[in-house]
Image (cartoon, rainbow, N blue to C red):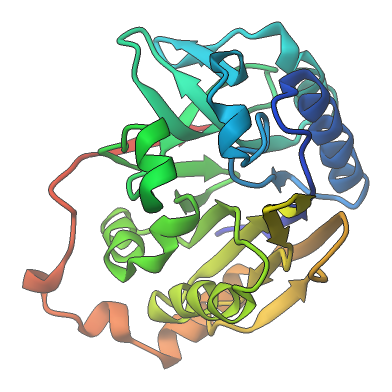
Amino acid sequence: MLTPLTVAAVQAPSVPGDVAANAKAGAELAAQAADQGARLCVLPELFLPAYHPPALEDLATDVAAVGGQVADARLDPVRAVARDRQIVILLGAAVRDEQDRRTCAVVVADGSGRIRVAYEKNFLCGPEEKALFVPGSRGATLHLDGWRLGLGVCYDGCFPEHARAAQDDDVHGMVYPAAYVTGSEHRRDVYYAARALDNTGYVVYANAVDGVAPWTFNGGAAVYDPEGRAIVRGPNSGTSVQVATLSAEDLQATRAGHTMLADRPAAMSENLGVGRDQVYT
């Protein structure tokens, strides 16, 4: 039986190009989430370098991964909070691996203080992202206190088949760090509510906010219930830590009443032709 899981969806700006400052800020936000009882804290897409294409041209904004492990000392404040507060922290990073592949990734800091690559964005959005990064080619499931949460990044959430592929791993919901620009509020609020309802599962959505023009972002960090209702949602501007508790009873009741997952023909199962990684915490 799953026990309730308290999660935090964070909206916060980043300083373009300053990984050390952003890691410190992320650690402080994760500590605030822990103060509110969260076991999982999700920070926005590319939070460590900032979603700012000119700054991302500087390769010093990358964190290096060897065997999937990240040893960058700039992330020590994140390690310390994850270890000392026993909170799992997900945050966006530009990651470069041993093969010199650069991806728009999610890294995870767990209770041991270890940081590793959890997921690489499958669907890159627009010419700037495609010039800066290579796409990931695998899905990933985060395991935390018995809960299984599929991982995506921003534009991944615009593809229903991406979240549906995660259901082949029997996930209870999805997690999306994102960077939605000012003016896209309607799409922001529709996509992630739809992914929750499509799959009768929770969605944890963390978004960038404010920032340096023309790359300014619209917040609205949220946790959606399995029918797509926002349990909590942040404003369109300003830093905010939105905390909600995921309920196994509510998940089971929704899936009992709305049986799309059980009713879909097996032949319709989508797997995007790729494997799936398991991220244990």
